[in-house]
Image (cartoon, rainbow, N blue to C red):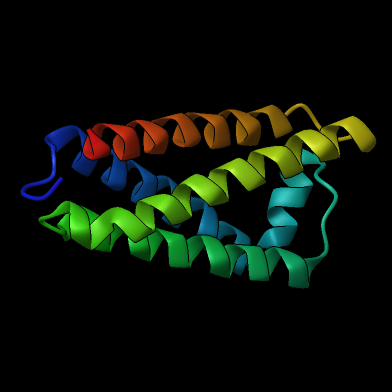
Length: 127
C-alpha cells in the first residue's frame, strides 16, 4: 500500500509515543522508584538501559506519527510487532518462573494491546 496513512494508524503511533516516552523516561531517570512502588525486582543499570531502549522506540513512534506514507513506516511497524511479541513472551516467561508483583499484568496487557494494534496496522496496510 502506498499513499497516505490512515488516521487510526497515526493515532496508534501517537498513543505508543506517549506511553513509551513516559515509561522510558521513568525507567531511565529513576528505575529504583519503579521498583519501590511496584516491588518489581530490578537492577538500576539494566533499568536505565531498558529506559533508553523504550525512549528510542518512543522517538520512532513520533517519527512514524509524522510520516505520510506506508513505505516510511513499514520497517518501524515490523520492529514494534517484534518488540511487543518478544516482550510479551519474556513477561509471561518471567511470570511463570519467578514471583512478580501484580503490576506485571499492566506490562503484559500493554504489550499485548500494542502487539494487536501494530498487527492490525501491518495487515490492514498490506491489503
